[in-house]
Structures are given as structure tokens and as C-alpha cells.
Length: 177
Image (cartoon, rainbow, N blue to C red; front, side, top):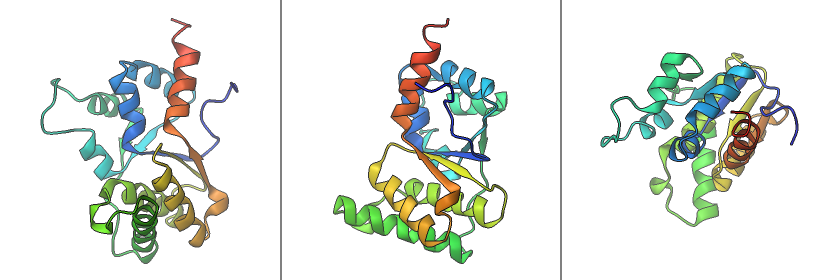
């Protein structure tokens, strides 16, 4: 395991599965500790945020809201669908996932496409020169990669498998107390 848990990137955009992996395993505190120690703020697209706040909550304050209050997670503004770079990125992501999973495009989760759209927004608006994207959904991962490559951002995007980060964080921090 490398000393560096997080890639060297200006922005860190997450899919739902990253936060859920820590939440379901009672390890959100480890994610907070690792992001704080590495000076990383996790960026959550609006639809990912919505998925992290289901209607039937088993707690008063969702962990994602506590993370936002603590400052190590930030919800991104809604993507601008009128922006051609963003809309074409999202369309390409949906088409790729549809083809890879052999599902109709209209059944693809909007959050998956929005992770790509949010990443495209950050790059296109020059709010970040480089972005790390965290997801464990292989089809979404490849769709975002292909879409952003077609937009000319292949050198500015790094992909991280969410469950690999979960394992690395738990290995590093669980035994440090």
C-alpha cells in the first residue's frame, strides 16, 4: 500500500458507492480522518447527494450531511444541461452503460451520468485542472472515461475504484486507533 491514499488531483468527485461503503461498515469516521489528513474535500454531484439521503432514514442526520457540516464533503451545484460539453458527456455515459449492461438507456441511474457531467463541468469551467473520479461501477467508470476522452480531458482525469480506497483506508486507519 502506498503512502498516498488519494491521487494528486485538484478535485475529487465521488459516486454513491464510495460513501455507502464506509457508511454500511460503520467507518465514516475513517473516511473523515483520511480526507482530513490528506487535505481532500470530496465533491458530491446533486443526484449522488439525493441518493445518500433516502426517504426512509434510520438516523436523524444522514452521515453525508454531518460530513458537509464538518467541511470534508461538499455538494456540487446542479450540472448545466444546456452546456454542450456537459450534456454530451452525460449522454455518452448513459449510452456506454446501456450498451455494457444491455439495459435500456432510460433505466440507467441519472446519478451515474451526473458524475461524468459534474467532472466535465469542473474541467470545462477550469474550476479544476485535474479530477479524480471515485466509483466502483465498472460500466459507469468506463463510460465516464470514454466520454471525457472524447471531450479532450483524458490527461486530466484519474479513476479510483471506490472499494479499493475503502480497503486502503480501513487497512491504514483501523489499526492505528
